Image (cartoon, rainbow, N blue to C red; front, side, top):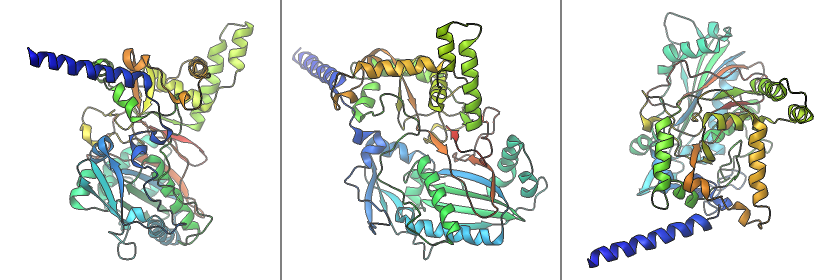
Length: 465
């Protein structure tokens, strides 16, 4: 009987703590996500401008470390034409110079303590390790790289690359494998056929995300044009910069406490609710949209908003400005019907059935979106504005406070960070024809619901989820 009373008292205390956290938590801007917490100000910067090259520093701790260990390396494959022998030499020098400029890329990741990942720099020195591997085109029947460069069918290009060329490139191993085998954190491969080149880049998930991936690609491009030499005009990567999604939802910041509460505090209600609503309706499709498609949807929204209604209100709605962020946000809302809040987190798993759960989910390539449908973005904007007005009377610190009701009674959709592809190789006559993400250790799924992005040439923004 006494044990039962002690148990009841313990549960009472836990429930009170849960309610206290539920009503009083704040989103600290320094903890934008579990990943941001690990990239705190205590981590020394490794900007080449500061000439700081630490031998060790912490990258991830806690739940973030568990997620990173189960995640494959970020990798992408790019098809270019207008390539030349000078471009090959410039690309190789640029890759080596990029590693020199960013010492973190020369290291290896290891688990110093349980749930604590560290990176030691200088393990694979660019002076002694070749980071760019040259590959020979295979002697196989079928379309060559040159013929694919002339093809306007992105789906056909993707299919040929997957079936004929992909096995020649390094696979995207899991971070746990990189830890066990002490593998490099960064690598590039290049295959040239006549004036057509196919190159891939691979970045450990322990080092960065999709935004980091394209920051490195931008550096490589600039270093190519500068003959592999560093320059003050080539921007450094801020490795300790907080993780900022390309497109943010209100509220913009979530603390670790917020995420824990969304998982079940108090009384595991949130956990039960989210398991029933989210895991029971898995949305495995991939959301790919480029700038031209966004512009088309903007026009469609205005036409649909007005319809046959010629009232002043309908006219005002139809002529109201609709931003690209409205289009993308409304698409996510439509795809995750019933969600009261979106949480940018690293714990999303939106995988197709035949790919293991631990083989993906990194926050560049996948997002739980069912289809390319966006409905009434002005309503979403109104909801966001209403939420902001609700907290206008609070001070700056309190405005980061989150509404409690969605976590207790509603559905929280966990959405991965979005990265805009705005970078490609710019060098003399080189022209990017096709780019595709590769992130599965079992090689990418080529099912019809995986729609390749449009060519990047002339496209200033291509959104991959």
